[in-house]
Length: 259
Image 1 (spheres, rainbow, N blue to C red):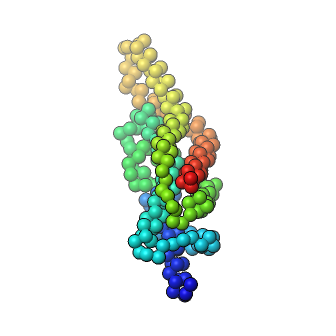
Image 2 (image 1 turned 90 degrees about the horizontal axis):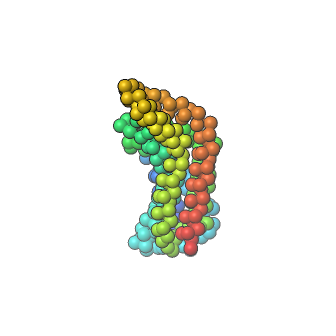
Image 3 (image 1 turned 180 degrees about the vertical axis):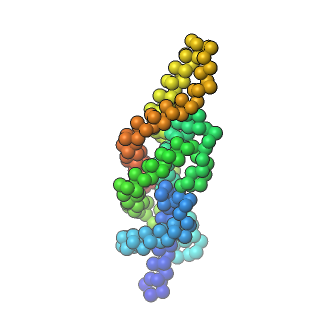
Protein backbone atom coordinates (compact mmCIF):
# COMPACT_ATOMS: atom_id res chain seq x y z
CA UNK A 1 0.00 0.00 0.00
CA UNK A 2 1.48 3.33 -1.10
CA UNK A 3 1.54 6.50 0.94
CA UNK A 4 -1.42 8.03 -0.89
CA UNK A 5 -3.49 4.84 -0.46
CA UNK A 6 -2.59 4.69 3.22
CA UNK A 7 -3.58 8.32 3.71
CA UNK A 8 -6.85 7.78 1.85
CA UNK A 9 -7.65 4.69 3.95
CA UNK A 10 -7.02 6.53 7.24
CA UNK A 11 -9.09 9.55 6.26
CA UNK A 12 -11.93 7.31 5.07
CA UNK A 13 -11.87 5.38 8.34
CA UNK A 14 -11.83 8.59 10.36
CA UNK A 15 -14.94 9.84 8.55
CA UNK A 16 -16.73 6.53 9.15
CA UNK A 17 -15.96 6.61 12.88
CA UNK A 18 -16.99 10.26 13.07
CA UNK A 19 -20.31 9.47 11.33
CA UNK A 20 -21.32 6.93 13.97
CA UNK A 21 -20.40 9.16 16.91
CA UNK A 22 -22.07 12.20 15.34
CA UNK A 23 -25.30 10.21 14.89
CA UNK A 24 -25.27 9.15 18.55
CA UNK A 25 -24.48 12.63 19.89
CA UNK A 26 -27.28 14.10 17.78
CA UNK A 27 -29.98 12.23 19.76
CA UNK A 28 -28.46 11.18 23.09
CA UNK A 29 -29.37 13.22 26.20
CA UNK A 30 -26.75 15.57 27.64
CA UNK A 31 -24.69 15.43 24.44
CA UNK A 32 -27.53 16.36 22.08
CA UNK A 33 -29.16 19.08 24.17
CA UNK A 34 -30.53 22.03 22.22
CA UNK A 35 -28.46 24.44 24.29
CA UNK A 36 -25.25 22.81 23.08
CA UNK A 37 -24.13 24.53 19.83
CA UNK A 38 -23.85 22.31 16.78
CA UNK A 39 -20.18 23.20 16.41
CA UNK A 40 -19.51 22.04 19.98
CA UNK A 41 -21.31 18.75 19.34
CA UNK A 42 -19.35 18.22 16.14
CA UNK A 43 -16.13 19.05 17.99
CA UNK A 44 -17.02 16.57 20.73
CA UNK A 45 -17.68 13.85 18.14
CA UNK A 46 -14.39 14.64 16.40
CA UNK A 47 -12.47 14.64 19.70
CA UNK A 48 -13.85 11.25 20.69
CA UNK A 49 -13.08 9.96 17.18
CA UNK A 50 -9.45 11.00 17.55
CA UNK A 51 -9.24 9.15 20.89
CA UNK A 52 -10.86 5.89 19.77
CA UNK A 53 -9.32 5.87 16.28
CA UNK A 54 -6.23 3.78 17.20
CA UNK A 55 -8.43 1.10 18.83
CA UNK A 56 -10.68 0.73 15.80
CA UNK A 57 -7.98 1.04 13.15
CA UNK A 58 -6.10 -1.86 14.78
CA UNK A 59 -8.90 -4.18 13.62
CA UNK A 60 -8.23 -3.20 9.98
CA UNK A 61 -11.88 -2.87 8.92
CA UNK A 62 -12.71 -3.26 5.26
CA UNK A 63 -13.51 0.05 3.58
CA UNK A 64 -14.81 0.27 -0.01
CA UNK A 65 -12.69 2.25 -2.43
CA UNK A 66 -15.45 3.29 -4.86
CA UNK A 67 -17.36 6.48 -4.06
CA UNK A 68 -20.97 5.25 -4.10
CA UNK A 69 -20.35 2.16 -1.91
CA UNK A 70 -18.38 4.36 0.48
CA UNK A 71 -21.28 6.84 0.73
CA UNK A 72 -23.60 3.92 1.48
CA UNK A 73 -21.29 2.82 4.31
CA UNK A 74 -21.25 6.38 5.73
CA UNK A 75 -25.06 6.39 5.74
CA UNK A 76 -25.09 2.99 7.49
CA UNK A 77 -22.69 4.29 10.14
CA UNK A 78 -24.87 7.35 10.75
CA UNK A 79 -27.86 5.00 11.05
CA UNK A 80 -26.05 2.90 13.66
CA UNK A 81 -25.27 6.02 15.68
CA UNK A 82 -28.85 7.31 15.42
CA UNK A 83 -30.29 3.98 16.59
CA UNK A 84 -27.96 3.89 19.61
CA UNK A 85 -28.68 7.56 20.35
CA UNK A 86 -32.42 6.86 20.16
CA UNK A 87 -32.05 4.02 22.67
CA UNK A 88 -30.21 6.34 25.04
CA UNK A 89 -32.90 8.99 24.48
CA UNK A 90 -35.58 6.60 25.75
CA UNK A 91 -34.29 7.39 29.27
CA UNK A 92 -35.49 10.98 28.75
CA UNK A 93 -38.73 9.79 27.14
CA UNK A 94 -39.57 7.69 30.22
CA UNK A 95 -39.08 10.66 32.55
CA UNK A 96 -41.14 12.95 30.32
CA UNK A 97 -43.92 10.37 30.08
CA UNK A 98 -44.05 10.06 33.85
CA UNK A 99 -44.11 13.86 34.13
CA UNK A 100 -47.02 14.01 31.69
CA UNK A 101 -49.07 11.67 33.89
CA UNK A 102 -48.22 13.66 37.02
CA UNK A 103 -49.09 16.95 35.30
CA UNK A 104 -52.42 15.53 34.19
CA UNK A 105 -53.34 14.52 37.72
CA UNK A 106 -52.10 17.76 39.32
CA UNK A 107 -53.86 19.98 36.79
CA UNK A 108 -50.75 21.24 35.01
CA UNK A 109 -51.72 19.89 31.58
CA UNK A 110 -52.40 23.36 30.17
CA UNK A 111 -49.14 24.72 31.57
CA UNK A 112 -46.63 22.76 29.50
CA UNK A 113 -43.27 24.51 29.29
CA UNK A 114 -40.43 24.50 26.80
CA UNK A 115 -37.93 21.75 27.49
CA UNK A 116 -34.53 23.45 27.89
CA UNK A 117 -32.75 20.23 26.90
CA UNK A 118 -34.40 19.63 23.52
CA UNK A 119 -36.29 22.89 22.94
CA UNK A 120 -39.73 21.29 22.54
CA UNK A 121 -42.92 21.59 24.56
CA UNK A 122 -42.98 19.12 27.43
CA UNK A 123 -44.69 18.71 30.83
CA UNK A 124 -43.39 20.78 33.73
CA UNK A 125 -42.90 17.78 35.99
CA UNK A 126 -41.20 16.03 33.09
CA UNK A 127 -38.83 18.99 32.77
CA UNK A 128 -38.09 18.84 36.47
CA UNK A 129 -37.37 15.11 36.40
CA UNK A 130 -35.23 15.31 33.24
CA UNK A 131 -33.10 18.15 34.64
CA UNK A 132 -32.73 16.40 38.00
CA UNK A 133 -31.84 13.08 36.34
CA UNK A 134 -29.33 14.83 34.06
CA UNK A 135 -27.60 16.41 37.04
CA UNK A 136 -27.48 13.03 38.79
CA UNK A 137 -26.01 11.31 35.72
CA UNK A 138 -23.37 14.00 35.31
CA UNK A 139 -22.54 14.06 39.03
CA UNK A 140 -22.00 10.29 39.06
CA UNK A 141 -20.07 10.30 35.74
CA UNK A 142 -22.67 8.02 34.19
CA UNK A 143 -22.12 9.71 30.83
CA UNK A 144 -18.79 7.86 30.76
CA UNK A 145 -20.75 4.61 30.65
CA UNK A 146 -22.67 5.94 27.64
CA UNK A 147 -19.39 6.57 25.84
CA UNK A 148 -18.14 3.11 26.86
CA UNK A 149 -21.37 1.52 25.59
CA UNK A 150 -20.96 3.34 22.31
CA UNK A 151 -17.36 2.14 22.03
CA UNK A 152 -18.55 -1.41 22.77
CA UNK A 153 -20.74 -1.22 19.67
CA UNK A 154 -17.68 -1.83 17.46
CA UNK A 155 -17.26 -5.28 19.01
CA UNK A 156 -20.78 -6.28 17.90
CA UNK A 157 -21.36 -3.95 14.94
CA UNK A 158 -18.07 -3.43 13.11
CA UNK A 159 -17.36 -0.71 10.59
CA UNK A 160 -19.38 -1.41 7.42
CA UNK A 161 -21.87 -3.84 9.04
CA UNK A 162 -23.06 -6.48 6.63
CA UNK A 163 -26.70 -6.26 7.73
CA UNK A 164 -29.25 -3.84 9.10
CA UNK A 165 -31.32 -4.53 12.24
CA UNK A 166 -34.16 -6.82 11.25
CA UNK A 167 -35.76 -7.70 14.58
CA UNK A 168 -38.51 -5.09 14.43
CA UNK A 169 -40.37 -6.78 17.30
CA UNK A 170 -37.57 -5.50 19.54
CA UNK A 171 -38.55 -1.90 18.82
CA UNK A 172 -42.23 -2.60 19.46
CA UNK A 173 -41.30 -4.10 22.83
CA UNK A 174 -39.06 -1.10 23.47
CA UNK A 175 -41.96 1.33 23.03
CA UNK A 176 -44.10 -0.85 25.29
CA UNK A 177 -41.37 -0.86 27.95
CA UNK A 178 -41.06 2.93 27.78
CA UNK A 179 -44.78 3.35 28.49
CA UNK A 180 -44.64 0.74 31.26
CA UNK A 181 -41.70 2.35 33.04
CA UNK A 182 -43.28 5.81 32.69
CA UNK A 183 -46.43 4.59 34.42
CA UNK A 184 -44.43 2.84 37.15
CA UNK A 185 -42.35 5.96 37.80
CA UNK A 186 -45.41 8.21 38.02
CA UNK A 187 -47.64 5.78 39.90
CA UNK A 188 -46.77 6.84 43.52
CA UNK A 189 -47.76 10.46 42.90
CA UNK A 190 -50.46 9.64 40.35
CA UNK A 191 -52.02 7.03 42.63
CA UNK A 192 -51.98 9.28 45.71
CA UNK A 193 -53.65 12.11 43.80
CA UNK A 194 -56.20 9.68 42.37
CA UNK A 195 -57.09 8.54 45.90
CA UNK A 196 -57.45 12.18 46.94
CA UNK A 197 -59.79 12.75 43.98
CA UNK A 198 -61.94 9.83 45.13
CA UNK A 199 -62.03 11.30 48.63
CA UNK A 200 -63.01 14.72 47.30
CA UNK A 201 -65.77 13.12 45.22
CA UNK A 202 -67.14 11.27 48.23
CA UNK A 203 -67.00 14.44 50.32
CA UNK A 204 -68.82 16.45 47.66
CA UNK A 205 -71.44 13.70 47.41
CA UNK A 206 -71.91 13.55 51.18
CA UNK A 207 -72.02 17.32 51.76
CA UNK A 208 -73.39 18.87 48.55
CA UNK A 209 -73.73 22.29 50.23
CA UNK A 210 -69.95 22.53 50.47
CA UNK A 211 -68.46 24.02 47.31
CA UNK A 212 -65.47 21.71 47.45
CA UNK A 213 -64.45 22.15 43.83
CA UNK A 214 -63.52 25.80 44.40
CA UNK A 215 -60.60 24.77 46.61
CA UNK A 216 -59.77 21.29 45.30
CA UNK A 217 -57.32 22.40 42.59
CA UNK A 218 -54.92 24.40 44.78
CA UNK A 219 -55.14 21.68 47.43
CA UNK A 220 -54.29 19.02 44.82
CA UNK A 221 -51.29 21.03 43.65
CA UNK A 222 -50.00 21.48 47.19
CA UNK A 223 -50.63 17.82 47.98
CA UNK A 224 -48.85 16.77 44.78
CA UNK A 225 -45.81 18.88 45.61
CA UNK A 226 -45.68 17.41 49.11
CA UNK A 227 -45.69 13.86 47.73
CA UNK A 228 -43.11 14.84 45.12
CA UNK A 229 -40.88 16.29 47.85
CA UNK A 230 -41.21 13.10 49.90
CA UNK A 231 -40.36 10.98 46.83
CA UNK A 232 -37.16 12.88 45.93
CA UNK A 233 -34.90 10.76 48.24
CA UNK A 234 -35.94 7.69 46.23
CA UNK A 235 -35.52 9.40 42.86
CA UNK A 236 -31.83 8.49 42.65
CA UNK A 237 -32.62 4.78 42.94
CA UNK A 238 -35.26 5.14 40.22
CA UNK A 239 -32.82 6.87 37.87
CA UNK A 240 -30.21 4.17 38.60
CA UNK A 241 -32.73 1.45 37.72
CA UNK A 242 -33.73 3.27 34.53
CA UNK A 243 -30.09 3.74 33.53
CA UNK A 244 -29.26 0.06 34.10
CA UNK A 245 -32.35 -0.95 32.14
CA UNK A 246 -31.31 1.37 29.33
CA UNK A 247 -27.85 -0.21 29.22
CA UNK A 248 -29.42 -3.68 29.00
CA UNK A 249 -31.56 -2.52 26.06
CA UNK A 250 -28.44 -1.33 24.26
CA UNK A 251 -26.74 -4.69 24.85
CA UNK A 252 -29.78 -6.54 23.46
CA UNK A 253 -29.64 -4.30 20.41
CA UNK A 254 -25.99 -5.18 19.84
CA UNK A 255 -26.62 -8.89 20.24
CA UNK A 256 -29.63 -8.81 17.94
CA UNK A 257 -27.78 -6.77 15.31
CA UNK A 258 -24.87 -9.21 15.31
CA UNK A 259 -27.08 -12.22 14.59
